[in-house]
Each structure stands twice: as C-alpha cells, then as structure tokens.
Image 1 (cartoon, helix red, strand yellow):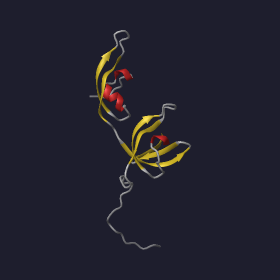
Image 2 (tube, rainbow, N blue to C red; image 1 turned 60 degrees about the horizontal axis):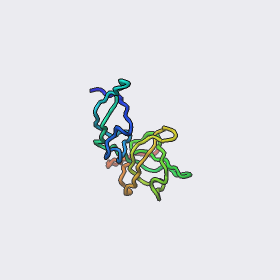
Image 3 (cartoon, rainbow, N blue to C red; image 1 turned 90 degrees about the vertical axis):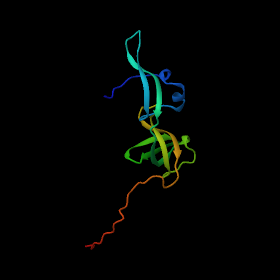
Image 4 (cartoon, rainbow, N blue to C red; image 1 turned 180 degrees about the horizontal axis):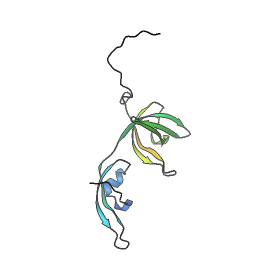
Length: 134
C-alpha cells in the first residue's frame, strides 16, 4: 500500500499513546474517520505501536540550549539543555525526533544519557597496510 497523510488531533490519540507522546518516525495504528459535518477524512483512535528512538552525541551547549548530531549524521538537532541535567559535549544520548514548538524546525526531545562507548562513530579495519612515505 501507498503512504498518505491523514490529519488527527490530540483527542484522536488513545490514552496510553497520548501519555507516551508521538514523535517523528513512530509507528502507529489508527482507524480512518470521516467528519460528518465537513466530509474531511482523518485518523481516529491513534495508537502508538513502536517508538522510533535515535542515538547521537552532544556537539555543544550554550545559553540553555544544546546541539546534537545523530549517529547516522545529518543536520544537528537542537534541544533544551534543561531536559537532561549535567549533559556535556561529547556525551552519548538517546532521543526522539520532534519539532521545536516555537520554530517548527526539527529538534530532539526525551533525551537520555547513554554509557560512554555505546555509539560506534568509526570503523577501523583490522587489516594493516605497509607503504613508503614520499
């Protein structure tokens, strides 16, 4: 089947899913509903089936905000430094991708610090090479 877009509001999200929050990349199930007054088609009884959790590392902190980069690369995402107390640059984190409420730009939410070494940021070949420097 093809992917399409259906709108829904907070009232259309079921209780437990509403409490967990819905973020970009989450998998959901829903029923299609047609508004009797307007004929508009949307989603109803939206349920969270699987959370999309991303991993990355903190690039910088300044004035109560931070920037992080996902382990897959891409543009840095902003986050409120208060959402993870004691976070420092180079800390490894887990997060969910959201939109900044003020700007609408991509942002990180629900940050959680990971143990150091959780992310593999480079792969080093076990093979050794011999060469002559000229």
